[in-house]
Length: 112
Length: 113
Image (cartoon, rainbow over all chains, first blue to last red; front, side, top):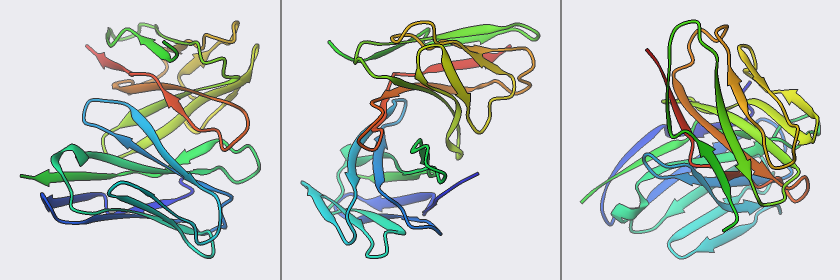
C-alpha cells in the first residue's frame, strides 16, 4: 500500500504565482526523493533529501525535509509554463528493501 | 549515450493475448524495475530485480511475468490473466546503494483492442 500521502492532487496557477506540493508520511523516513514528469514523458529525478530539516534549492525550486523526517515539500517560486507537469515524491518502502514507493503526484497546470 | 530504452512506444493487445515489453539499460545498474502508471494513481511497482536470474514481486504482480537473464535486460510479459492491462508501463534502473535513484525509460503505452 501507499507509504506516503501527497497533496494536492492538482494545482492550477497563473504564470508567476508560487506553487507548493507536500508529502506526508506516518513513519520516519531515511530519505525522500522528488521527481518531475512532463506531460507525455517519463519521471526524471530532481533531488534527494536525507538530513533532518534539510533545505536545498535548484534555481526557483526549494525542497525541504521536515525536522521529524516525516514530511517534505517542494516549492516553486514564480511559476513558468515550463514547470507544467506532475511532481512525485518517493520514499523507501518500510522493511529495509529501500525500494522507492511513489506518492500519487501533484499535477501542476500553469495558465499563461 | 548511456540510458534506458523501451520498446515499442505503443503496443496493442488483443483479448487473450500475451505481449512482451522490452527494457534495456547500458548504465551498468544492478537493479531494474517495472512500474505501471494509470491516471491519478501514480506509479505502482509490478516487479523488480536486484541481480541476474532473481526477481521479486511488487505491489501489483498478478497477471505479469518477468525474466532477468542478462544484467542489461528486464523484459515484462503482460499475460492474458491481466484483466485490465491498458496503462503506461515504465521501466527503471538504479544502483543498489545511495537511495536507489530511479532512472526511467521513455515508457510503453499498452492498449487492449
